Amino acid sequence: MRVTQGTFSFLPDLTDEQINKQLAYIVSKGFSANVEYTDDPHPRNSYWELWGLPLFDVKDASAVMYEISSCRKAKPNYYIKVNAFDNTRGIESCVLSFIVNRPINEPGFLLQRQDFEGRTMKYSLHSYATEKPEGARY
Image (tube, rainbow, N blue to C red; front, side, top):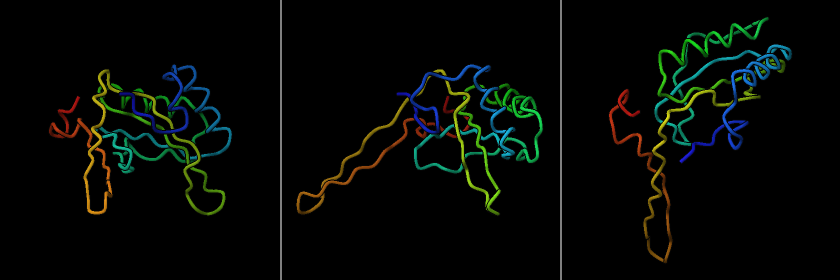
């Protein structure tokens, strides 16, 4: 099952050239960027691990690409994404987010259904990845 989170999630994976173009757009708009990674891509897991420090006032997209490459080398079987933040209104608003790396095998999710009184059904998602300990999921 392919995890779909972020701006380009329903498109095929971006090539490095396409990623560079998106990074150039981020830099041209004056946005700040950061690189995050996780081995638990549950849709409600909005707190991924931060790679390095946020990249404020970056003037060249290659600086962000360098951080992506470093994260890919250290975490090759993790989900890695780039976030761009716009602080022009005095707050950090995420304006762009996209996945730049994913594991070869994406185990997917189990949809759990629970029956309650009055024919009420409640659903929840369980990530197959979390059945293994952190760091050994992929």
